[in-house]
Image 1 (cartoon, rainbow, N blue to C red):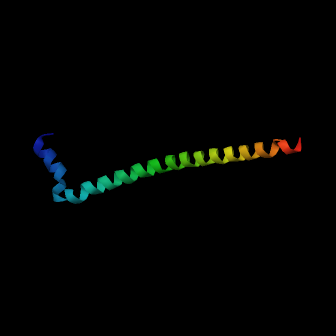
Image 2 (tube, rainbow, N blue to C red):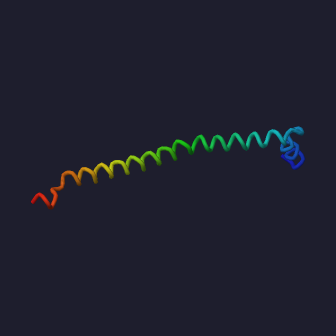
Image 3 (spheres, rainbow, N blue to C red):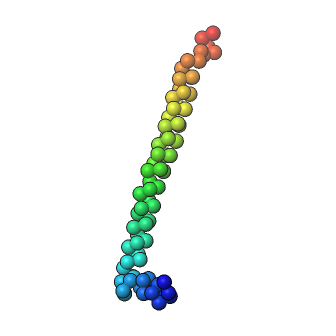
Length: 70
């Protein structure tokens, strides 16, 4: 592939101003579509761990005998 054919390929027959941004938007959407479930899973796991820690702390407070009753 020589420089002239590469340049004509990149020019896309005069439609490069429409084609290359479309490719860019496609890859950005593809990246977001790939990242969103991973980030959502990470956030939900963090929230679940925090909820479980709160429940454990609440359970410890209710199971611990108070100093006033002894």
